[in-house]
Image (cartoon, rainbow, N blue to C red; front, side):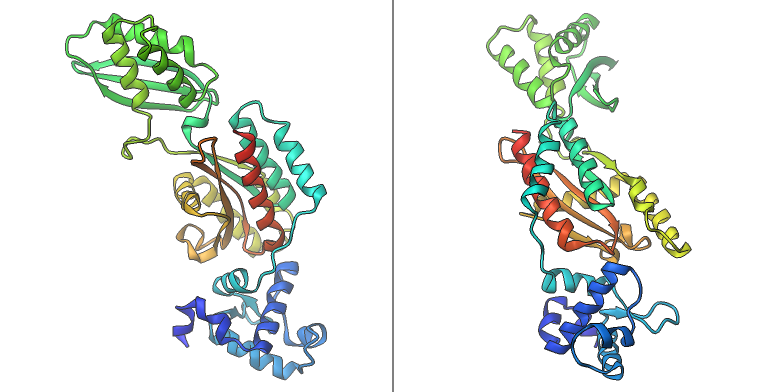
Length: 358
């Protein structure tokens, strides 16, 4: 029945009512306990009025479909990553946040609104605590407060633009400059920009400086103004080859160690920690959620990054005041997440961030 595993969109339709009910019981029990679920337990708790033998037959069919697996020699079954995907997409009943939960999230995030990075860091920490896993958030470099920018001569016709953010990140870009340009021009451009950008985001600094230059209010000669325009323009993001890699903020790694009771679980968490250090690949994964209209869910082996650790990511995009998607916030943890609770939390937090940073 390989063709069934290749077309998960039809799996729910293939399952009859008895199989769907039993499968739901198995997945919900696994999400609650993390343990394999046996036929004897299901015969006593499922409320379906089926004998243990009948349940074993249904479980065997579900296993053949690729929805369940038997770990080691255990008589119980666990949902596969395909099974979890089927459950999340077709059988999960997503819960709703209470007014108290909404108010708590709103108060903590709104109270941290000193700048965009404070909001994002607080939101990531909040989700981590509420969901009991690690919180993730990506932010475009243009949304991070700047500390310093410097123009340095490299060679005739080339200059290096160095940008330092308030959190200590450093990025470099090479720009073309007129040959034979005097060193004083770069110094003038550096002094002019630094007098205006500290504590502002790149977009804010660019808007202010370009308005001055276009209005001819800038205290710059024509050549220095050209250098400033080139230096700021190189971070515009219009050229994908030079667009900066988004910043990744991870909070609450220690939560992943809670309730780890066996060596196999501990090994998976260790591999997840290694995955979290593979920042570029994790950022690329989260960037996929930027194209989603709502919450995006990545489960285990569906993504090569988590093929070993068997982890799940639940993420949603947030927007700036121009209604442009500028980042993603979410959580990461074992596949045994409380999806019904976490999904609405991530969704509400992403929408709240969009309102706050406006």
